[in-house]
Image 1 (tube, helix red, strand yellow):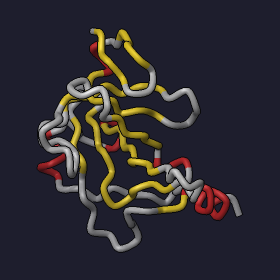
Image 2 (cartoon, helix red, strand yellow; image 1 turned 90 degrees about the horizontal axis):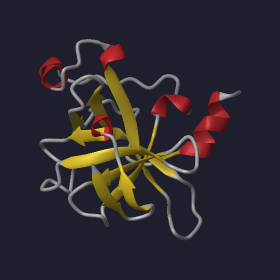
Image 3 (cartoon, rainbow, N blue to C red; image 1 turned 120 degrees about the vertical axis):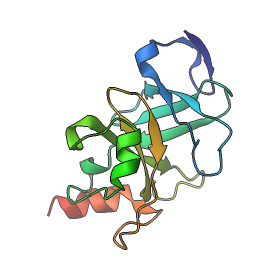
Image 4 (cartoon, helix red, strand yellow; image 1 turned 120 degrees about the horizontal axis):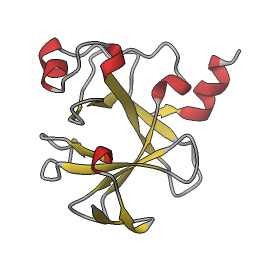
Length: 146
């Protein structure tokens, strides 16, 4: 399937890259179809809307910089995504790259959880006080290596 992207222009994506997010993302409820793409700069990914070329998010695996990260989400929510256990889920954090050169941050309070087989996703809001919407990725990566 061909899609228009904000950063990479027109792309031909495999149907297996298409993710259905029935409830949309927080603040973007009306957009429910996305393509999960490898970003040119590893270890990041793009979550590109297939409905609006200008809508693209940067994602990162939170376990890369927070090995203690845990997603404690309701069983019903996980079941709706086809997630029966941790190996069935792909968990990614939305990333903010400030234009002023400030620290790159990741939202660990509202991760995107995707069922690997179903390719259905949801942004889950976690109540755990350890997780905030802005975690400094490089600072926490450095701290996790000590």
